[in-house]
Length: 199
Image (cartoon, rainbow, N blue to C red; front, side, top):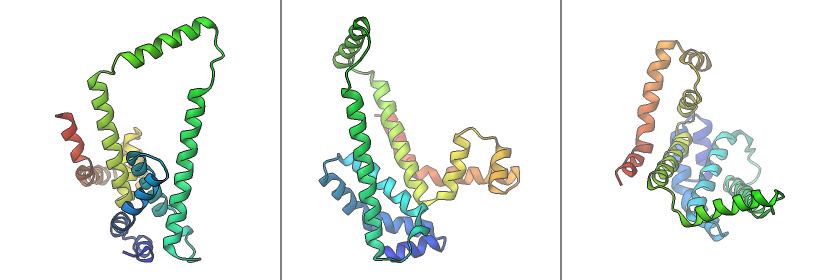
């Protein structure tokens, strides 16, 4: 699907068709590009979904100045640069010398030895894998169903059903039913995550 067609779908409210066109056409070349710039395949996936979400939610910023595909790639490059900057900041913080007293340094060294020599519990590693799987699934769902994802996110943040109802302009009863529908729509995107629990 051409970038112009993707934009038209999204602007006309056909976000599912536009989102799938974006994934089908641009996911593979963009993740390859990101990997070619020195990041891992997993990180490339993260940068792509960040790129895709930005395209969908900032679609009105495209003013038909130049090719739509070039606009997509400009966003992709900017997201890659942002990600690389974040990684460099984390590395600088990790490598920064400690200014604590010697006893604090000794305690830090002890923790470092523990981290390097005692493996993390398998359950913790498994939980992290599942969390990452669910996060990636929700990002994909958010790309295709942004309005439904927004409502589920409000619930995840702990908002009451009354507040959610007011936010989306529905009655409490209708909002409960809508939330149930949203969860059913989300299920296929995170179904594979439950398989990790049985590994």
